[in-house]
Structures are given as structure tokens and as C-alpha cells.
Length: 507
Image (cartoon, rainbow, N blue to C red):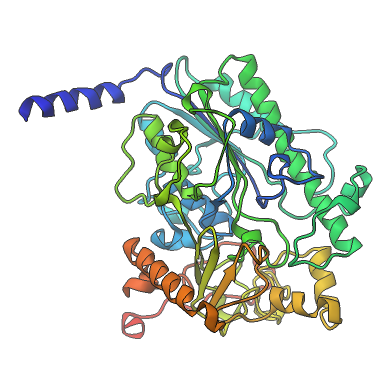
């Protein structure tokens, strides 16, 4: 036994001392607000995404990838830490902080000798200092390069150029880990940009949760132009790696932090808000490249994956599960341990009196989406009264857009009435959707007696998973998300978060 222990120690120390030239590089490319369907390889007939399509054809494309939270900061916190958002204290809210006690994969890779950095939108939005950090958790910021003559709504940051600067600054033989995060396709958009680019509105596939009108079709086309901008930046980064003969030794990931910025999408637990594109390429590191996988993935699974490929054992508090075996095992097989995703939200933009959020949890399987809404008396999309919203707009969890304006102004019209209610109205304590029969999740089956056994089973399973991963809403721990500081822009200057309850009040 002693000899086995010595041999194991030697193997681990050898793995930890692998030279930089042998360790894989990591290029993580993340768009801002892009739903699963809106990539060419995922079947969209209009949007052009040659970079994503290439990575999918030369690597592996995932059909069941979900963000951990449909809101920017919490989703990015989960990606960086490999943990579900209910384990991350303040970081479970947007416009908050990511406390330094939560280790991130770039920090751990740095200790292994990786050169790390980011461009564009890394961990954001929020403030680093209250969490004890002096540098963005994604790494050192590379952001000097600027694009000329960008269209309104598109940032003038030269993401690919900044990646080039990062590579030029890399020490010789050091492996790198770079986060390429665009601000696109986050709103706002140049009105009519899609039509001006010659895109055909008749070919747009309008999600059934949105009204099918010329206004909505044009709005989706504008969104597509920004998805394409992200993809072009990624394509330039890939070309750069190819020129440097480093493409095949680089793990390339393309995804998004959460779904599209439209009503009943972003900041909701429905698929339009949580189902994201994901493709991974890694030279010879993926068995049978060109595969399509229907294994369920949470984006928090990426952190332990990156660490394991670098020979680092993921910390025990990471709830994400490494994808390494799935990448390396190309045999036709099911993955029974990957049959669901867990999704959550706490406070998004603070658009309720006292800064209250809309806490909810979801279990997504191949057949069903089950949601628990912990505070069903609150407005899920924000209060209709703009005076109690930090953004000073009605239903402030939903970004202002032509689609939102149309649905608000015409909410009494018969053809829009149901969709507007689904987008802006209150929701019951439990929701159940058959995603095969109802892919846009429009018909709640929670009160349907034919599904009572399904509901009971999913409720029990979700509860068990939340207890296993120590969600304080299930374990009886302190629930403080409604009271954490909010560091975002307050357009409503009178808006404030309720003070933290005293111990006596919380007991």
C-alpha cells in the first residue's frame, strides 16, 4: 500500500509539473444574451455564425446546455466558480460582487503557470472592491484596441485585436487562458439594422411566446446583426490561433451567458432565457469530433473541465461536473448522470419595492421543465409601477425594446392578451411544462390532474438536488439576497434596498 501511495504521489506531481508547451490553452468565447436557437449549426435559417458552426463541426455541439442563471452577473459567477448561484452569497444577485473567498478557475490556472486575461465583458456588472478583489475574476483586462465606424448599439471594442495584444504579452512557453466576452447582442440595437443589412423578415422563426408581427420580426433581425458581430470577432480570434499554429492545442468554447433580451426570455427560467448555444473544439482532445451531444450541461460544468484538462483537481466545493470524460469518450452512449439541468434566479435588476428579487428554482429534463416560484405574490418581470424600480421603467426586469413596447401598449388586444399576460403577469407557486409537446412553455400543467404524479416526482427530485447542493431556501440557512447592496445605476434616485434584517427578525 505504501508503494502504491508513493507511485500515486509521483504521478500527481508529474501531472502538476507538465510543461506549458504540453498543457492546453483555453479560449473561452461568451456572447451577452443569446438563445440556443440563434446559431446556424443550431438550425436558424437567417443568422450567420460561421465561427460557431466551425467549432461545432470540428468539435462537439451540445443541444442541452443551460446557464445556471438567466442574468449576467450570477451566470458569469457560476461559470467562473463552478458553483450554482445559491452557494455564492452576494454573487447570486446581479449588480453585486463576487467575494474573494470563492475561488475561480482563472485564479487556479494562474497558480499552475497559465497566463490569464480577458477582453470586453468579463465578470460583470457589479463592483469588485466590496468582494475583496482588485482584478476582474476573468483575468487582466486587455481593452486598448478600438474599432472604427461601428454601428449604433455595437461596442467599439476590438475584441480580437485585444486578444492579439494578450498573446503578444504572453511569456514564452506559458499556456494561456483567455476570456473573449463581447457586449453583443445585449441591447440596445440600431433600429432597422437587420432590414438594412438585407435580412429577410419572412424567414425569421418567431418564438411562440412572442407576437408574430413585423415589429417583432424586425427586432429579432436587429438582434441577429449583433449575434453576427460576436461571431465575427470569434472568427478573427480563431484565424489568429491558426496563423500561430496554436489552434489544435487550444480548447475553444463558444457559448452565451443566458438567453435573448426579449419578454419571457432573459431573466426568466423558460428555455428562451436559459437554453444557450455551446460548442467545444480541442484538436485531438475530443474523440470523434463532429459529434452532437444531448447530454445535459450547466455552464458551471466548464470550470472543473478547464481545471482537469490542466491537471488540477477541482476544489471540493465546485458543484459543476467536468465534461472531460464526455469529450474523450466518443462512443455512442447515454449519460444517465447528465439527464437534467438546475437553474435559478434571485434578484435581477431590483425592480420591486425595497429592492426585492424574484426567487425561483427550476429542474429541466429532456421531457419537462419544473419551476418553483418562492414569492408568487411578486411581479416576476418587475413591478408595473416604475417608481419602485431602480431602472425607473415598468416591468423593469425586461429590457426596453420595440417588442416589449408593442406587447405593453397592445396588451388588451385579443391576439396579444395571453402572450402579454405570460410575459408581464404574476405566476403561480409551481409551473410544469411538457417541453416536447409545448417547446415554448405556454401551457402550465401544474394543476392538471393527469400530471400530478409527474409533478410530485419532479418536486421531490428538485428538492433533493437543492438540499444536496446546500440551497439555503431548502436547508433553512440565511436567505439574504433581497438585502444585499445593489451597485448598479439607479435611474430612480429614491430607490433603495431594504436594510438587512436583524438576527431577531431573521429568526
